[in-house]
Each structure stands twice: as C-alpha cells, then as structure tokens.
Image 1 (cartoon, helix red, strand yellow):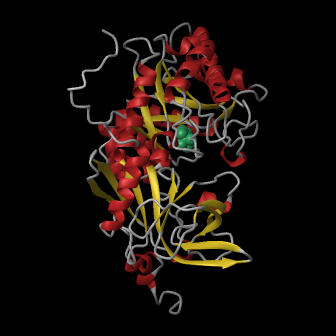
Image 2 (tube, protein in one colour):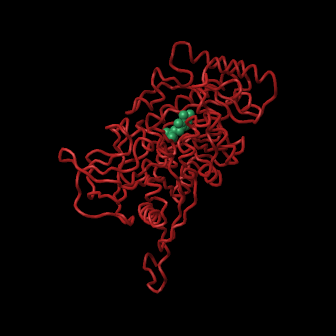
Image 3 (tube, rainbow, N blue to C red):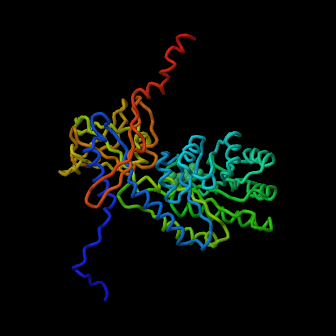
Length: 457
Ligand SMILES: *Cc1c(COP(=O)(O)O)cnc(C)c1O
C-alpha cells in the first residue's frame, strides 16, 4: 500500500503549467504571424488560466460558506472589458460588475443575465438608473443624492432590482494612492466614520424597506488583505446594527467588492482566493454562516496573470552605454506602467525571432515602446538576454488593465487580442477576441467623416 507506483502504468498526461503554455503560445503566435511586421504587437490570453482562476474563486468561497448560501461572483468588467472574456467567465459561473453604460452593454452582449449583474458607478445618470431598475439589475447607490433618485424611481415603478448603498469603511490607504478606495477622503460611497454618517445610514435603511444590501470595495493593488478584511468586517457590523434596529433581516446580502492584489513579481498566483476567504472567515466570523447572501466583485485577480503582451523588437540600439530594445508595445498598451513605473513594474520575457525563449547572459537594458516621448518604456534597466532586432519582447501579467485598456497616444492602433489553449504535446489553438484595428478606423474615429466641418463653419 502507500505510494508505491506501478511502473507499468502510463504516466497521466499533465496539463502544462502557465509558463509552459505561454511559451507555446508565443512560439505559435510568431509562427502563425499573429505578431509580425504587419501587426507588430498583440495581446494573448490563456483561456485555461482564466478558467482555473474562476474555478479557484468558486472553490475558495464554497469551502467557507454555509451550504445553501447564495453567492454571486461578479467580474469587474473594467479589468478586462472584452465580450468573449465575459462570455468565458459567464460559462464559468461568473457574473458581471459594471460601472458605465458601455460596460453594461458589454455584459449584455456577452449574455450576462440581469440577475447576475451589479451596477456600481459613482456617477450614474437618471437614465442609467432607470434602465438598471427596468432590467432588474442590482444597484448600489453611491451617495445620498443618488438614493433620492432611487426613491423617485422605486415609487414610480415596481422593480426586481436588489438595492443597496456603498459604504466607505475609511479603513485607510494601500501603497498606491490612486487605487486606494477606502481612505478618509475617498470619492466612493458614504464615508462611514464621518460625523453623523452611521446614524444617517441606519435611518436611511429603516425608512426604505427596499434597501436590502450593503456594499463595500476596499481593496485594490497595493492594499494588504488584512485591511480589506477589516473593511468587510466594518460593513458586516453595520448590517447587523441595521437589522437589529429594523427588528428583521432587512439587509440580506453583503457585496464585499473585489480588489485582491496580483503578484507581478513571478509566475506564482498569490495571494490566493483561498487565503483571502480563510482570512475573511477568521476576521468576520458571521460572514459565511448563511445569514447573508454574498456578492464579490473581483477583477484583476481573475485575469491579470493570464495575459501576455507580445511585441516585435523593431530595432536594438545603445545610448549612454545603455542597450535599448525599441519595441511596438509602450504607453498605448501599458499606460499605467509607463506613467507610474514605480507602482506598476512589469516582468519582460525575451523571445527570439522564431518565438523561442532567448537564453544567454543577462544584460541590463531598456525595453522601449513606439510612442514619441522619452518616458515610453515598458521596463528600465531590466536584466534580460540581450534583445536584437527581429526578436520579441513579452510583457507578462498584462491580462487586466493593460492591452484591453487601449490609450490612443500617437494614434497607435489597438492591437489584436487572441485567446489560446494548448495541448500537452505543444499544439496551440487561437481564437480572435478582438481583431487588430485597421488604420481606416483610426481615421474614422479621429473625425475623418467630418473632414470639412471646421473649415466650413
Ligand atoms: C475596480 C472595482 C472592482 C475590481 O477591482 P480589482 O482590483 O480589479 O479586483 C470591484 N468593485 C468596484 C466597485 C470597482 O470599482
């Protein structure tokens, strides 16, 4: 008994790991010309990896919630606003968190049912609110003025929309100021620790029996998990207080937001959903006991690790003793990294002209983009095998908030995006998620059809 293996049994076929799948996909993308002289940059999405992250999210919460607890995992569409990705996630049992008319339209185009969609923007117009309530989409009001708009809508027509209020637990900032949603002066939600706010909120719920949810989103890249869990604890306490005051379980669902950070330093997927779920269970014991339904809104953690930006090296040069690889991926696909490199460093992987991993001594070099300003660098002084013209540079972990968030500086085209799956023996299958943008479309979007509008004014 025990772990003696029968050597005559064939070994089980192992699914290649994420780094192996990526190498296979890069090679196939180069061989098949997805990246080449005509289309020198593309985004690649690892479908197997996205499915695995969705399964890990379900498993992590299933492991800690009381049986029968309704749990909706709604993907924050802004992280990867691509219809086929939303469709893939829908098939994996994931809903959608939307924050604009465009994001809602993407979710609907992907076939997301209204009952699995949540609307959260801080600046919803009356028309957006009316549409959401007509569709039965869950809405979290951001502030007292928005709540007053909901009052009018709820009074004017019946709705199936579950309604709640977003609360800022004011638990403090993380390491990236622009992404810290729970500071004392954050623009999001009702600031819970401001004088009078707590009493106002309790009263607001007692006055509105249709308010059945509480929402917070206190995490993000750079926010420690303990602080996120603290934010959730604060909101759970508030729900208990409201329900005690109401004498019934008026608040029946807690929307705990997203914000699990992503490890950009290696291929390891940490922190895990399982670790966060366990921390939540320890910090907020009542959260998973079945007295509340749950909504989560994870974005980056579902897709970031599964995206690769692959770019052709057009030229290799040297300046002031520093080797510089001039590639076709820069500010248009890696806006955050280019403008805030200290907060958003990216790992670059070097591949040769055939798309094979490059070896050789590591040389500190700059990996530059194609845009016409000096700061357009994907990486500065990063140690890599020396890149040459015709090689390929891959920016890793760019599946969220990178190539899907095009920035049209220098009228650079939106690159094609392709999903891939791989077989253990190396066969790679691609599917187009978004076709590369043709130059005619750039002209049309830049007012081409209105060429004479100003001269004729
Ligand atoms: C951006 C956002 C999310 C997702 O954040 P991630 O850091 O990508 O997980 C969730 N909820 C709201 C309200 C958001 O604005």
